[in-house]
Amino acid sequence: MPDTLSPEVAPDTAETNRSLRLGIAGPVGVGKSSLIATICRALADELQIGVITNDIYTDEDARFLRSAGVLDPERIRAVETGACPHTAIRDDVTANLFAVEELERDFAPLDLVLVESGGDNLTATFSPALIDAQLFVLDVAGGGDVARKGGPGIGRADLLIVNKTDLAPYVGVDVEQMVADATAAREGGPVLALARDDEKAIAELRSWLLELLATHRAGQHVPQDPGPMAPHFHADENGGYIHSHEGEHAH
Figure 1: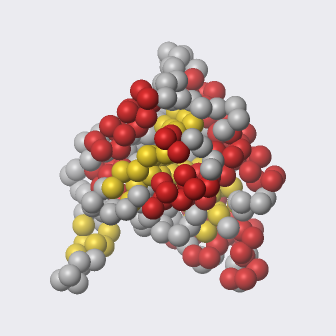
Figure 2: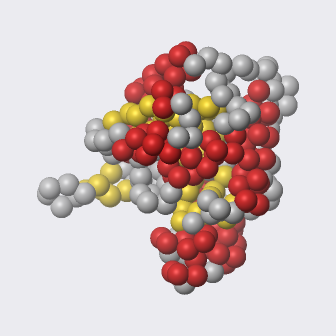
């Protein structure tokens, strides 16, 4: 993987006018919705943006973003998945794909559609049938050791965000070490340490997104299939069970 914030490209493909669809995944509470608000603030003056949020039984994330005033509220829509978060972004993307396509029709032309996953674990990845590229988000409050544990979400996202770095002194996390561990887990893939008031980091994120959009428009960005999800645990009223996706990798 590359060691810069440059998206991978593949030459000699046709140009596209469709919006860039960017997935944002990560565990509960890492700041995915706040990251989307930051992206919108950084780019809304120059790009036409839409947002799709995912929650199991609520539209709370969509309401948060509407109240933040980062976009026209009609450009922020919620999908209530009614199932485990990864199901709606990886296994059966129908509801999300319909929501994205409807948003693109209603506000054509859109430059960027951000699709926020419901909070999930380190196995969460988006299907390339839904999105063109994906960010995975961790935060320092979750512990400095999380990054080095790896997993499909950490290892295969186009960009890994280590979020809420301003909280590091309060939770005893060495941000530089966490970023180094994350970079090693990603075999050199790009990692960005970020806080919502860190103007330098936000500028780096903005540049990465604009470069990704340019390669997408040129038809040079190839969505990376992250492969099947790893087995993971689902809690239920009977104590829970291990769920494996072996044999379901149809994309």
